Figure 1 (cartoon, rainbow, N blue to C red):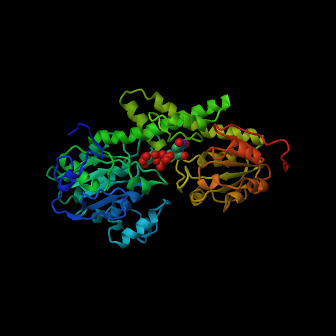
Figure 2 (spheres, rainbow, N blue to C red; figure 1 turned 30 degrees about the vertical axis):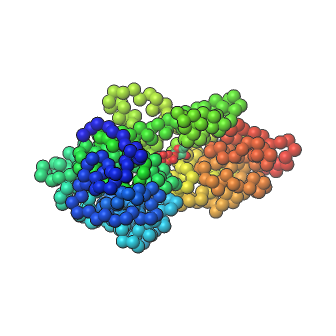
Figure 3 (cartoon, helix red, strand yellow; figure 1 turned 60 degrees about the horizontal axis):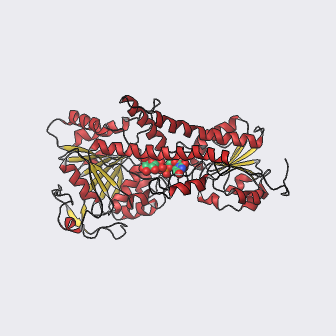
Length: 500
Ligand code: UGA
């Protein structure tokens, strides 16, 4: 079935839930299911919908895979997550998360102890007897911009010979539209015509840093399924636990919803960044403009923070992949390419401001605050720091770098040396610096004691790539302050300034 149909929370009424149906007139497809009460910790539990406890296999324990595994176990399901790396499996099995994600450690430990969650390197453990298998492996960008689907194909090839009765295989990884068809063909070729399985799409909309909350309190759930059986199984999985709109659609539509969502978020950020450049030219504050337009519900206030633009492992990659999908289908991709071009230029704009402030960068000490692609994560994939740090090193600066969580990741790429020091605090990074550049929106930076910061710096110059500070407050504290859309200010004339 390929027609799109939207169900909202309120329309999934209690009478639906009282039966074993799914609120959509479809019966459950689980032959032997155990109905238990949903865990009391569930934020959106629908009491009238008894939980259909399922056995789930999850391929991949990266950001999406690990959060999905832990949260599905938290909902009461029995989860076996597989990763090829024995060290990752050992660490997770001992309750040690391999990523920095608020709230994850507690749920990981609790669900391992409750016997609902285990990790393995053996694919059979995740496949045998499972009702649903989720594909959460990486889909990194290839050099030509397309998504690299090698790992997805490998999972399909792994599952095919091990099918033991009907299986629902669900894409969670972000993949280009129509990837499910390739998974289906791959499994069908290898498993033979008699094996029963479906491939569905259930994209995740998790943000790093708030992924656990996003999973447990979703704003919507998208279920893309082309058979009643697959759709019904996924409704059984989610409906008892969540009271949010559920978008039921075809597999291809669900795949495309995910790509479109990330492209739209990227476009919103690039749009506000162009406006922020105009704001600087006009002498107005981009944050006020964002608030002024964001209160219009047609526009919405989120994702209007101007600054260094979007990084991470998702938005840049998914935008590139969508551009190639558009091109392959003969559709004009100019708007998407412009979003990408504007984003790439953000780091150049920041560096131009830094160079203007310092005049000569060589031999200057530059403090770098934040290397993660955004606050509350240790992820540096696609982070501005990966462009800024090498540029500053090539320009001959001496760097003092601090990030509350992501330093170890950057250290692997840039070990400390006589021109690169990793600091233990923001203040330590600022000590003796000719300038401080802010690359990540960690809350910790917002609440820095400005007087103290200025007192340890050699020259009080701050180039703020995330617009964390108020220009007036920075000026009052004696800083020369450069932002991306908030305006640039010099210190008051009477402010004492220590020269080099
Ligand atoms: C993004 C989406 O927001 C999620 O919905 C999606 O599930 C996820 O990708 C994914 O595809 O897996 P994430 O990459 O974790 O999540 O990070 P975002 O919160 O979207 O931030 C992306 C980048 O945009 C960051 O570098 C952030 O600093 C930047 N950003 C965000 C801005 O520059 N301005 C804003 O207003 C918001």
